Image 1 (cartoon, helix red, strand yellow):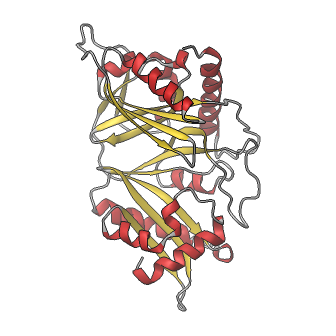
Image 2: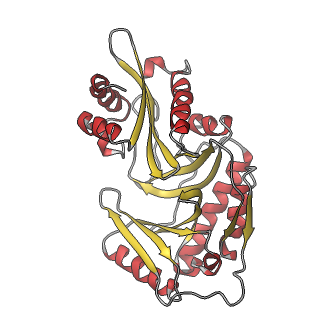
Image 3: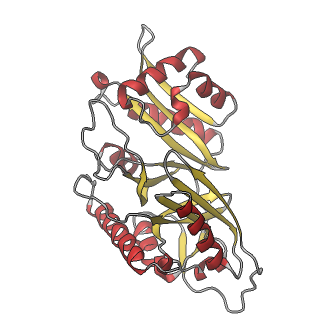
Length: 327
């Protein structure tokens, strides 16, 4: 993408999504260029001879070796000709040259096109963020959205290079769902659910949080697991509720054996997704809390039985967590 292309990307976004796309910076050409020049975002476009931008894909760095493929759109009259797919191949080659090991994406559940792109490229869907965003409408492409005014998204990862073996430490509450996610892959991961005896924890947990007011979503990042981990997370959950959060995402590093003791199902947190190497050399377990756990899955279009099994298991655990939640 050149500086001259940026206004055309904005026009394409408006044509495809109106003003509903959750990446706000997509609507500001100067911010697109600013992020590209800073190395935060990588962009590929397809442009007609007369200068019309007809397709755009982008990746934003989410960790040292992880980018999110956060935008993929094609003008309606050019769909069905693999324009976007060709851009995705070019984008993957570019970010791999920058040292990226994983491309993260959030395929739509309202059609199977983006899910198929992940699987065809050798990736896997590792989870589902339930009712995480306000509705995104795609003009001329998606007419139906979920009831209740909140959309769910899949979470997917495509590996780009040689993977290193890692232990994944998770509480038994979440082990079955992590296993369902990893069973779709050949990633060298060993699931462990019992922390070593005599593990020494610091007295205090270290975490940080941020609140996305437009999406009414709180993100909590656990940095150091301490003896008070359950109390610390509950306090952040209560603060998020007081701030009006409709959903909470809790991220826990699974390279720390202490994460095997972080069982929060009884406090409203269910499995959301497995995030490989999201934090440096550590994988991350993402849990979710929902104010309203009633999920309309009738509008979902899922690509294959494996994805269906994982999706329905995640929805079931979200409902279980809400039913068992206590202070």
